[in-house]
Structures are given as structure tokens and as C-alpha cells.
Image (cartoon, rainbow, N blue to C red; front, side):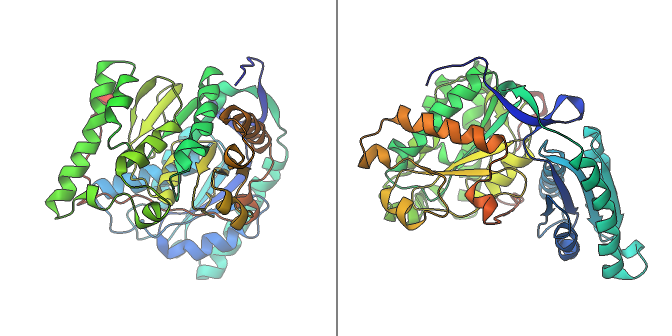
Length: 401
């Protein structure tokens, strides 16, 4: 792809130098018990999104930390103008705790607990709507301004992979990743369980030996811990859907996964839902399950996610728009309402990877500038937080962050 150093997009200025490509009001539940309250509030707000989840109470150790960091990250994402946090009042991930952390972004924050509101649920919904309406009015005052691509964080995702993805859609996305990084931006490759068999290739791209060593650490820790509970992870990959799609080994699947990351040097490794520590390409320790993965990417600050899917996937994200690209002709036909970019023309029309990459680049720019993806139009706002206690008690050492 040709490089244009003058490429810009229109975004919303945020405090502390951040830039958003959406201008959403997040209604965030601190605990599962108030999910319905959050949803009812969000339904009454223009550009309102409910950030709900099945957790928040009775958590401890790594699960507590992961849930807290993820919810804070989602609320802190630059696509969010302001956040109304609704708690119950007796959970351990409290509305006050979340508010204190998200306030570091300097964006508008309000919080309250349902148990503190006389009248219960109905009164809490009214209070939430009132607070969010005020933010809605303020957000409407903002206008898009031009920014260069150094402000952008791109998330990379696979879902429903098949044997065609790794030679069509995935290398197309790799071209986009390289372009974003050439323009001074940032990209995140998650799905560390799908690096298996390609560790040596990733390590060669590390910016130094310390980063190279850390690429293999989480994979080995995960495999050892699953063996301790009687599961050989290599025996459950590829998944049944992957196998039906023509993949035969985890190495084949992994080669497709890492193709999305292009050729740029790897700057470092980050924990699940952590924000990259600088520009360039970063790897995220994340389990490779679509919705959990994209939740981690959005919590890590990704403005937009490109998801390759061979067998088709409808899922989206409430914070970051998800662009679907598919290289399988049958899937592009059968699931046309879910696919944003048809990469199967590489097969059916003899288009080159560069041809489709040019098309995807233009699509990406339109989405960044406000055009809705199919997942957004269809209302897919899926969210799941990775739970790790007992299966993956691994975290990067503090000095590596």
C-alpha cells in the first residue's frame, strides 16, 4: 500500500491528549445485579451504550483485578464522552471505586448506588436518565476535528477461522496494520493461545531480547496450568468449527492469526485489557475467545477493531466499532448482512491482497469518520470479561509494564 504522511481522520478531542472516533455516553453497571437498570437508562439516551456484565460481586485475586481493570478501561476508552456508573451498594467492585479510577481521564463521571435511592429500581432509572441526559447535552456540543493517525489504536481479531482466512483476509489486515504503524499509530494483536507454533517468528520481530523472552512465557504458563487440571490444550485446537472450515493444526491457525499483525517490530507485551505503553505493534495476553478478546481490546484503548472471519460471526462491541472482513465466498454470500469487506474477490475475481487492502483502508477511514459497521447497525454490543483464577494465574512482571 502506498504511504501518505498527510492522512487524517475527523475525531473528538478528549482530555489529556486523547481522541475519540465515537461520542458515546456509557452507562456502566458495577455489578450484575443492576444490569437491567443500566440498560433501561442507556435506551433513553442518544448515543447511550450499556456496559453490562455478569460479574462484580464476590470476586477476589486475579479475577477481581481483571474485572476492575477491564471495566475501568472500557469507561476510559476515548470513544466514550462520559460515564454514568450504577452500582447496587453491597458489591466489592463498587461504583465509587470505578468512578475514582475512571476520573483519572478527566472525562465527565457520575455514580450512585441503587440501594441509596429511595424508591428502588424505578427511582434509580430516573436518576440515571437525568444524569446521562446532562452529559448527552454536553456531548452534542462537540464537533469533529482533524487528527493524524498517530492518535489511533487498532485492535486485531479473528473469529470463526477457516483455511481460506490465512491466505486472504488475514494478510489483507496485515497490510492495514503496517500502514497504521507507518503513520505513527498503534495496533494490538491479542489471542496468545493462537501464537502457539509461531513463537519463533514473533520472537524474531521483538525489538529486544527482553521482549522476545516474554512472548513465550505466557504460552508455556498457560499450557502447564491446563495440564495440571487434566486438559491438553493442544488437543482442543483447532476448534470443531475451525476443522470443519479446513484447518488441521493449531500451527495453521496461528499462522493466520499472526498474519494480521503485518511485519512491524513488536514493541512489547501487555496484560489483558491494559493499554499499550507506546506506539507501534503490541501483543496482548488474551484467551482467543472472540467476545472476551474484543472486550480486552476495547478496554485497552482500541478505537476500532478489524475482525477476520472465515465461517462468519455477527458479534460486535459496545465501545469500539467492529469491521468484519471475510475471504470465504460462500460465507460472504450467506452472511452478507454481517460482512463489511468481501476479501473473497482474491479468489473469485483474481484481485490481489493489495487491491483488497486498499478497499479495506478506505472502509476503515469511513468508519473512523463516523460510518457505522454492520455490527453497529444491527445493535451487536457483546461484552465478556476473561476470568482467570484457577486456569491462568500468570501476569507480566511489573517491571515489564
